[in-house]
Image (tube, rainbow, N blue to C red; front, side, top):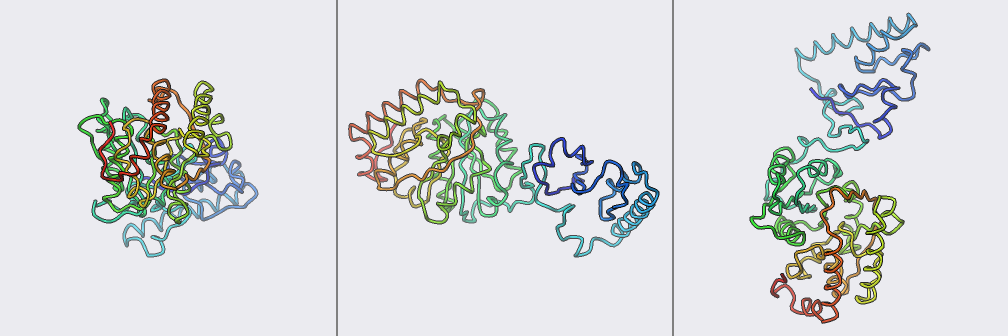
Length: 377
C-alpha cells in the first residue's frame, strides 16, 4: 500500500536523507528533532511511525530511548493487529500528518498534486465551472507530466480537455490512458490535423458545451506553468476580467526562464509593431498562456480566426475591438527548445500577415459579422 503525506518542498531533496526521510513509505520525521543520533537527548516522539521508531531504536545510544522505542513499536504493532481484526475507527479515518487517505502526495521536485483516484468522476453531464484546454501534438513524452502539476483545487469543479490534433506519434493513446487514471479528464481526437488554433477551437467549444464559465489554455509541453492556472483564472472567476494573459515579459520572466535572445528580440519587435497598429498596450502578444471568460467566448466569433499559432494574438485583438482589454499577469517560464514545436520564421511571417489583415479591415469585419460569419482558413 502506498502511503500519502503532505510535505513542504524543502523536504523533497537532500534534507530528507539527513532527516531520515523514507521515500518508500512516504514518512517524514519532525524536521525540528535530531534524528541522526537516535534522539540521544531523550526527546523520543512516540507518535512517530514504526519505520522512524525502529531507526531510533537501532541507531540510538541512549538506553532509555531504546526502551521507549521498543515499547512504542510493540504497542503500535498490537494496535495494528487489533485494527485488522475489528476494522478502523472513525478517528482513524480522519486525515492526519501521516494520513493514508490524503489526496496529496510528495513529488521529488517538491510538487504536491492530487491523487487521481481522489478526484470526482467526470460524467460528461454535470456542469463544470472551470475548463482547461490542452492542445496536444507530438506530446506523448510531455503530456503525462502536465496533469499532476495542475492545482488540486481545480478538480473540485473543473475539467481538463485534451485535444489530440491527429498527432502522428502516440499522443492519442497516452491521452486515453491518462483519462482512465484521471476521472476529471475529457479527451477529443481530431480525425484531420487542424493546427494549434483549430485544436483550441475544439477544446473551447467542448468546454462551452460542458457549461464552463472560465477557460484556460495550458500547453502539452509544460513550458507554461500549470501550477499557477488558478491564480490566472481568478480575475475571470471574480468577474474582474474577461480575457487574461500569462505574460513572460512582465518582470523579466522570459529571460530568466531561458528564452534565447534570437526569440526574445523578435518577440519584442513584433509586439511593438502590433501595439502601434492595433492601438493596444501589451507587454507581449505571443504568450500561449491565455484565459477566457464564457461571456467573451459567446460574444467573440473565435471560430472565424486562423487555425495557426496566431490564434492567441487574434483573440486579444478581437477582445480589444469589442472594447475589452486583456489583463496581464506575470508567470514563471521554463523554455525548452527541444519540446517547442513552433518554427519562429513562419510564425513571424504570419504575424506580419495578421497586421496587414488588420490594416485592411479584416478583423473589424469579423467583429461586425459576429458569430455567423464564415471561418477563416
